[in-house]
Length: 304
Image (cartoon, rainbow, N blue to C red; front, side, top):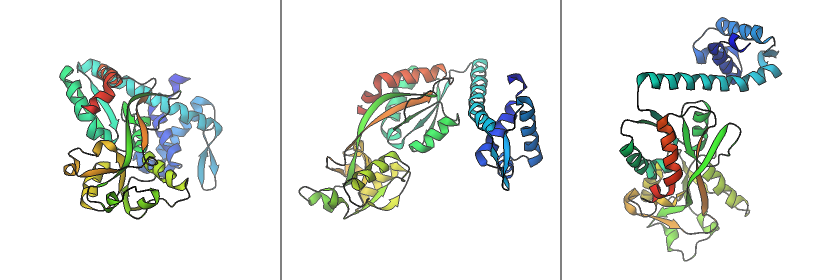
């Protein structure tokens, strides 16, 4: 039966399931609705089961359809991996690595990592995606990157998650910020000022909000919300805003070295960064080499 399934039909089926309707899927795929109807019909004939059923004016997945969604993604990614592996062998290239990275690691890990890695593998091409954890996870899930460096991902049946380095997220202010003149600022003092923070979907923001809520306090007043963490040091330097990000920014050249930590035990978040990749995915020889380098030297590369 497997050889009766067309990979293009599976891709279209996946899009229909994700968008929840033929019309929306047709717009996303730039195909006509009759073409997608034909895709569903062929799959149902090959599998001998109904994949969708009517639900009001729309359609919804049947139990068989829900099972196929899970399988379709795996089949699509396996096919993409096979095509890529064979193409790389045929082209005789040294390899390519596609890696998704959190902004903090893009700033403090990627430069020394690339320096060491490319010294031994000068022919390798590296494609990077810099984003927050939610975006990186979606990119990995879609097969658009080979691996991601992120936080808060658990190993699973489908994913490998290997710890590669650690750091602390802390409250940071400009060295001229009024709060640093207080002898022992506390949590309630932090609420006297406005903040620049990542969106609520980001792990560090969720952790910080939880610290205040658990103590019966309101969450920080966010004046600027941004997913561009690398913009935060300059914003902090030029305003009286507070932020919550890696301690690595303190004392570095970011914003002229003018950033200072607001030291509170309650707002010091020890966090682990994991290298995450799909368990059965194809990793080029270059990708495997990068994985090995991160395993052995993750923390020391950041320290350098």
